[in-house]
Length: 128
Image 1: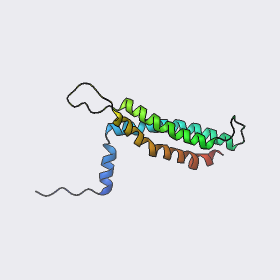
Image 2 (image 1 turned 120 degrees about the vertical axis):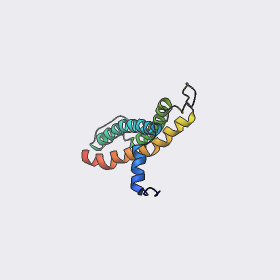
Image 3 (image 1 turned 90 degrees about the vertical axis):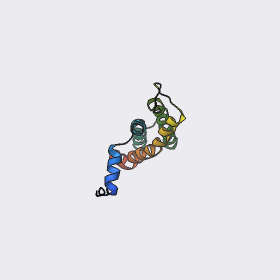
Image 4 (image 1 turned 60 degrees about the vertical axis):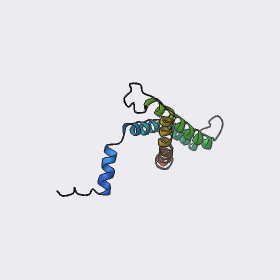
């Protein structure tokens, strides 16, 4: 009996992407939703300041960006903790532990960065 043909690197990654575990998909989707909403708010604030709007408090873009990252990380961890229970095994009760929150936190780190980069480097020049 012949061995099955070896899959290419791209075939392996494509199959992994199509069959991603549900907890990972939920963690990424929740973090992405929060990051997009807050990124849009940050972009609106940044564009308003760039156009010369006199907003109360002056120019607080650095503080707003830090607050954006903090809220995306915390919301990603919290939402993932709420919607991603641990596997039940033979029991009927779903449990949540800090590992669920850690999954959301670690999924939110690159998402927060990428959404902010897209907002500032790609969308901002189109709006200013």
